[in-house]
Image (cartoon, rainbow, N blue to C red):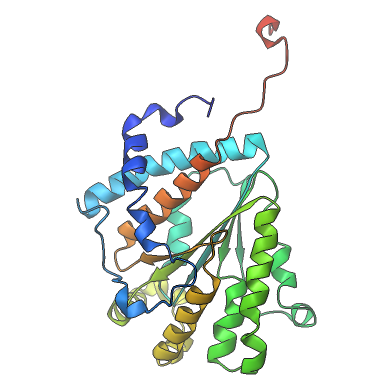
Length: 289
């Protein structure tokens, strides 16, 4: 990379280099059958210095991500898609708020996918997704995604099994097409356990300023925990690929969740080996009067 050192902080480069192999432990290898019981949602082994220092490190990473995002936007060649999935209260909004704090909104977009509209339901289920994929120079964050069509659709039996079961192949082909067209895809499953979800739901109930985030429907979903876990496990097992990997991110500790995701995104952007566009010729002779 010919650009000047990002932030001038060698310690951040050292941190990223040291964690490169470490965060790979959270990556789901293609073809592996995932059992979420084997993935510790409270793990913090890649940064065991505690919450206070973890938050300070995230501030440094955020500065670097901001500069890398500016470089991505300026160069205008690459595209990054970040997919966030997880149960209610897993922290999708928190990731967007903390990991991407300070980035230029001109080059970063968030797409949230809720219940399909009648117009969307009249088309194939990927139609509404494709419209939000990133253009060159953009980062797009999916807050929930096309994976709802093998998750909520499955758990609530909105379509027959023979319909949702063939969608894994569709999704892999869709993501392969995006990757072939130059999109870097990173998918993060925010892994929490039932006890942590209970605490977060109770916190929303106890705080009047968070009542707007609480829905009794969340309690109904909680009763389907085992069904949801089975759906997530098959999603992770069947759609983690070399070109669109899933990361099972320990998310009981919010600060650690954010560190893992930020580190992984920065690594991916650095691997693009981006450069700022060449300056217009003769700028050294320009005099502004």
